View (cartoon, rainbow, N blue to C red):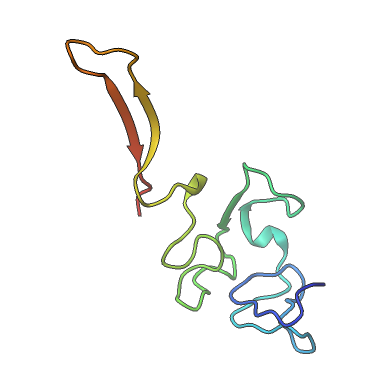
Length: 117
């Protein structure tokens, strides 16, 4: 419901995928009727939880099945998901600024990080 006329590409579906003949959806590179336990390293298929591991399990039909030759899912493409959604560009993690100067200098500590490619 609510997906009519959608283009759905490069997905693994537990049910027959909604881009199948007879639906109003279309897409490419989809693989349907996959048992949930054959897709992810750690996910029960019921609800999102932070300890889930959405890497594709060894032997998954989605490994290398993306149109660009990478895995289907969030860890595929040329810009895969990074744990904790840490961006590639440097970002500030911590800033500590002193409340007074020491010998005419203001103590400042800044910690930055970036995700490795």
